[in-house]
Length: 318
Image (cartoon, rainbow, N blue to C red; front, top):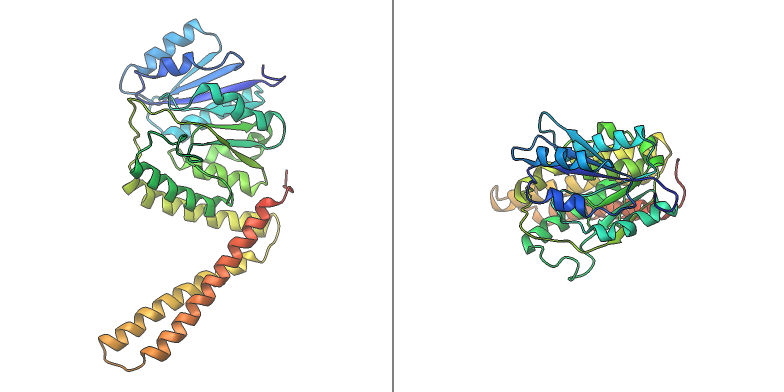
């Protein structure tokens, strides 16, 4: 136990035969349970996990017969943790990128009851993100911005980080069983936490980059996950600001989006009228479109401001 709390770590693993044992060996002694989920690896990862678990009773191996994605592995670990009445469940990747020496710092805010969820932050300083390629940093920054808008946690950095900790109270409330099974689970988990009013916090830590290679291809992943983020944003607006409570920022977002689109389309039509159809109405139609677009953007910025103020509130629904 750690400060009278039962701690577990969930580790999704897919083709990690070179790194999984080192990862398991580094888990601190205060961790009561280690749920290692072999997500139908094609190499010897599954056998290595089974052999290691046979010699280490705190390790609970979970085998997926079909590859389901890291989100499904995390959900499986969460469910097992609830069944065993674990107080705090941390998550780490099986590729050794997350220094286990920082695990106590990751879980401390949850143990103290200050927050119900923590997520690591590798982007705080150049030293912390040393070894991260510029392309990976850029892709991570874009996803972080989109996730802030979708989840409502505007002050979070590095929400794509898999080094996290969550309280049993939060797991008992949020419908984590329905989370996206692949990498989008990171974004959906944050959105669910925001909908139900749970406080979160960033915990700075350095990343460790070695021989492992990220399987995320940002040039295809960002467009694909953007659709998911849009759906999460709409879901959060409906549940948090209409079903569970009410805030006029919903109307600000709606009118802002409508006015901005009308203004943008109107501007394009005005340009076509001038340079293709030859109509001399660019000034009038262009100005009207600009006013409409500016008004829409003002509504959107006010909506974001109200959303940020709601994040600062200590009140929650739990």
